[in-house]
Image (cartoon, rainbow, N blue to C red; front, side, top):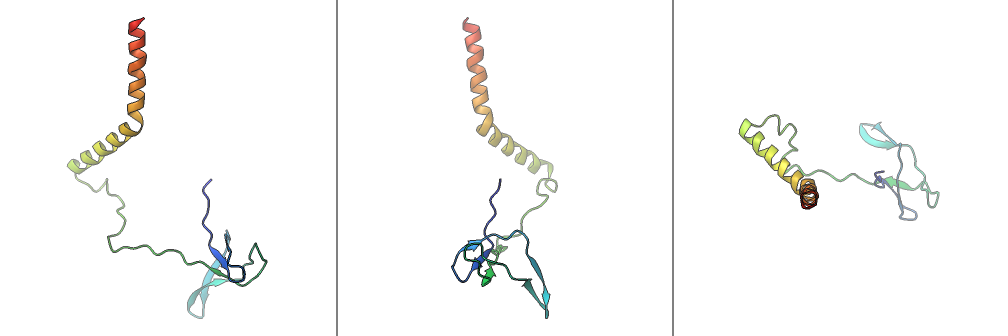
Amino acid sequence: MKRMANNFKCNNCNQTFFVSVHKHGFIRGQYMLIGEYQCYHCKSYDTEEIPKPQIDYSKGAPAYGKFSSASDEKKREILTKRANAHYNQKGKEQKREFFKNTMRKMSQ
């Protein structure tokens, strides 16, 4: 189970906590949090939402469809790189075990 990050902070006891369902909306032209949310620790309503970290796009936007839009040569490079990474991660041990088992069978 993936643990969720705390998204609220209590100004009374300085504890952070997670609220799974909370609402936002436009109030007088500004996008704001709607409603009050109680701290689980001290039961205070003096809470605020922790702002989400901003994504830095200065190095470029995420590349979606990188494989499908690549040339045939680039696709071949990408697939070779993936295959090598998979082999180094899982295939090496399996190949070693198969080899050991084959050698045992041949020596009997």
